[in-house]
Amino acid sequence: MGCCSVLCGLKAGIGIGIALAILGIILFPVGNNIIQETVEKESVLEPGTTAWDNFVSVGPPVYRQFWLFDVQNPLDVVENGSKPIVVEKGPYTYRTRYLAKADITPNTETHTVSFRLPLGAIFEPSMSVGSEGDNVTSLNLAVAVSVTSQCHVAAILLKGVSLFQRRTVGELLWGYKDPILKSTLGFFYPYNGTFDGPYSIFTGKHNISKVSIIDTWKGKKKVSFWNNTYCNMINGSGSSCYQVPHLLTALFFNILRSVSAVYEDSLDLKGIEVYRFKLPPLTLASPLENPDNMCYCTDPVVTRNCTMAGVLDISSFRGVPVYISLPHFLHGSPNLVDAIQGLRPNDEQHFTFLDVEPTTGFTLRAAKRLQVNMMYGPSDVITVLKKVKDYTIFPLVWLNETASLDDETAEMFKTELFSRIEMLKTVQFTLLGLGSACFVLCLVAHCVLSRRKSNESV
Image (cartoon, rainbow, N blue to C red):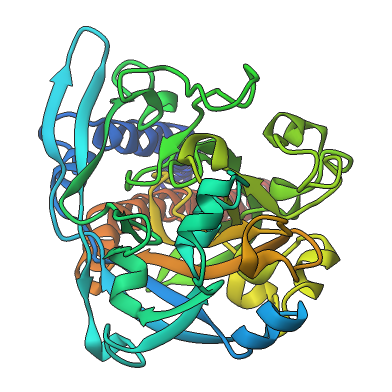
């Protein structure tokens, strides 16, 4: 009777082991669904979610570092048509995100939320090599602005004016009153006290794959600066958004075109696994290498019949000969770098990237690196350009705009999300382990006792 009782208990143990193991196995897809539902719920841009709290807050500090190109031989360039020699000066660092989004307005019918992004820059001396009063010899913006006119009025206005000027960092970046044109000029003028937008982005309600994707910018669903439907498309999320869509397409409104990032590697950021996505070399490749860029080629003379790589001509909507590139013409045509002595493109220093947490899709660290250039060329009517031999795309400044989650946010992430995921995994593996162990031990014991009982009966 005792042996039978033990065998019955072992059979029950086998059943319990099987049940525990099955429960552990079931919890894997069920647990993943629970995690996915929780993440999606917290990722929707509506009041009460983690995404909304991040959206309406100022968020982590965003810094914009500037390196200006200081011309060492200005007279030699003008008098002899020599190649400009430049020395990089920087970084001069500013905090550019210290104001919360303005005019936040949810629209429940379209599942969108609109807002404006206030723009401002606060100088950070401790993160800079000098002061805003440091002097830099750079391209005379009045000359560069007048290059495209090639008229006698411009020649009269610019009589006796040098191709280069010496001004302070603060003046060049944010604006100064030009004595020739009688207007305010600057690399980023106007900026302080202005707004970007309004943006309208999808909240992700009922369709989480659309969260933070732009619906309209300045009330329009596409831009109108490129003579092409594809190039005028607004794709992805604005650079102002903390969250990015799964396709990782971001619209850089500095240059008014969409760009895509590609996966490179998995990294550790403050104990959190992130996926790094980089801007690929094909982004600013010539149309010969990347046919999708043909619609961005607007000037066959400057771009050498659309064969030049590395620059984006935005003069058509800026009204002045402005070109955007990666710093030091990274991934650009050799003639861009060869035309200026002192440039040293470096992929490790000059690439743009996003570090994305794969479970939530949040961008936890990012660096956007761009260079602003202007063009000057030979002229028969403007004196300071008569010795210039060819069109030159001249680098004015390159910037590195960075943001990263702080220690407090990292701990919140790990506590609120990852600790729950780890706890669920622990429960899953514990049930599976206990169930398997119970099943194996009871099964072995049951076999041993059954064989012993059979031998005794014989």
